[in-house]
Length: 136
Image 1 (cartoon, rainbow, N blue to C red):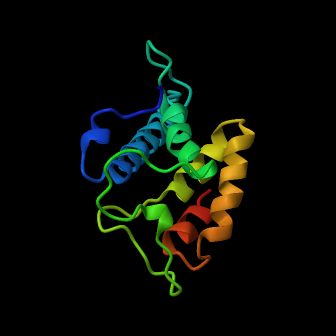
Image 2 (image 1 turned 90 degrees about the horizontal axis):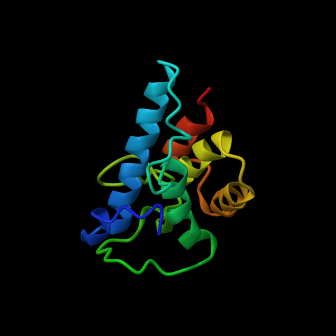
Image 3 (image 1 turned 120 degrees about the horizontal axis):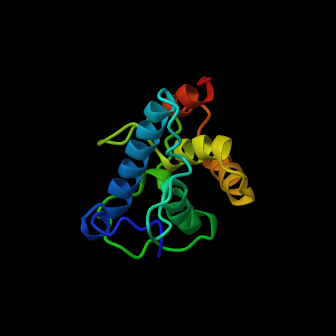
């Protein structure tokens, strides 16, 4: 289906690497904005795009569907520490921040629903979320 990052789904931490790629696409889209290029709404020949990739991962979380691909470590969105100091070993991004950014760009009630569900589970002291919330 659209939004799957098929090469990443064959890796041992498929969720983490799929999410990492989404954040790379988000960064690229933000840089493109500086040159008045809209990559947020760009669609490939088969309709693939940034939103489809975010929606693909979001669907599993929003609908409580088990991740069907190999993931040898706990997914970032499932980790929760009381002190709020958790960062991914690989990158300081999570599904919350991807959905938070996408919610500003795309008109989709599922984004807000996912954000609200994640917000109930994400520690407010989480340093990444503090950075995201202070972004202009």
